[in-house]
Image (cartoon, rainbow, N blue to C red):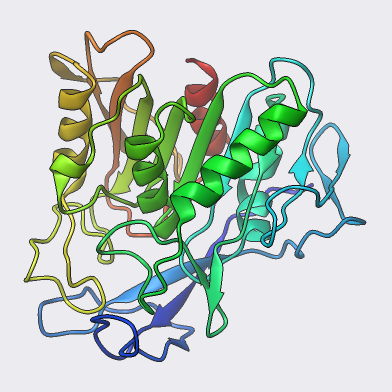
Length: 325
């Protein structure tokens, strides 16, 4: 399958959401939104790809194998597995951004994961007014106030697959709204998740709510020019709609993780090349001395906005990080 780099389809939300019955009516837009400010309405993008929605008869062509999909897990939000569920294989759960789909995430990340011998789950969030979302944090993205329990749904989905197959570690990779969800899942169900990669997301504004009771490895990847989920964060009460609750910044997020995971000194790592352009634009921040089985890293992509333009090699670096645990 040729590498697919997701384009951004921006979804403009035209009014603040303050609870059930007052949600804004989202309208798809085709042009990037300007940087949000306290007096502007922010936008939340949905990554799109050319990959069709999977079905029981669909196949996804990886570089080395064709993998049939099934649809036997997840209850009323069924999802099939991709890959060969051999004993000990890593289970990678892909969480899409606001308005996107599991098929979109599978199209972007499936090839690299399958080539690494992983088993992939790419579920869909709940659909409201034609847009799928995860109920992740107070900032993002249950704008209609449904209260859907996505922590329970994802934890049950993982347990269901692991009961069926003798798999190894569980990793969750999320983008944007999916990254917020990955953080929350690791905070509340560290007994279920071994590692997360959160791309362009953050913890909840209430940092004390994240207190995992088991080891977990955390990698955050964030563009320092992200105008949507801002690299520096935005304080509660100062965020534009719909992110009214605000969120911590990328450095604050990873430092909180390092604190609750018992990590020690932070240090810069060797620069990496994740994006198109052929330059080492990404600066890792790593924490030493974490509790066994834990880890905390932030990869800051200099000059990148919300939609990081990963190369195929860049995606493989992320997958390699997951495998290194």
